[in-house]
Image (cartoon, rainbow, N blue to C red; front, side, top):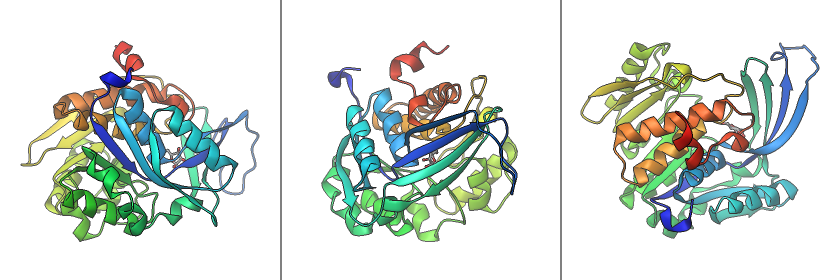
Length: 310
Ligand code: RIB
């Protein structure tokens, strides 16, 4: 996409990782050693994946985060710059290595992920505030939970003070969000597992997603979108109107970064002032393409690929 055609400004505050990926016939059980078929090292991190998804679909994207002073950090910066992402908000830690994720992907396309935060853990509220000018220029500010929670809270509070639209992808979720965060969130976008942890309710179906979304809206989030993988997504709009969006049917090879693709594309469409239904539809198509390909950032489609997808 040409620079002139880019629309909407998205700032992603979040994690940048190098993914070390082993492909194996099945996911190993505790204590089991198995032979893998393939190893690859690719660009990942929920924040960086979301930034790349927004950039490839056509948004102006800037990122705030932290890499280590090492070869992985240099490579991740080069990768993000090659996507046209403004990396002026990415600082370098002298004490921690760039974050890594150890990922195993099975032949069924299921995965396990262990993240070692490294330099991502060095992002501070002051670090976010240093890049206030970047947030001021944004239409939409996106964050996740792979960064220290005080930095995420500072991001949401600063974005709210600046009058920006906020998107929180509460991944990974370990416990309910602090009550004071909820009114700072315009779009809370958990998957079914995260929604269940946040709302304290089981989420196995559309009706479970609706109940969890209502609970999270009652707690203060303006709009809630629960992504349900192959079962689609459930949107609960501000005001209480709900809708289910069926997912395109595809053969999954690797679901890594499917949620990140959804979030990045969705945020780009909010920034471009597209209607909510259209934003979710485009995000679902992009995520569906991503699961048919291996790896995190290598799997994220361009706008042309999403437009070609029937
Ligand atoms: O959401 C997928 C991402 O989670 C991977 O790229 C990995 O780095 C972890 O952050």
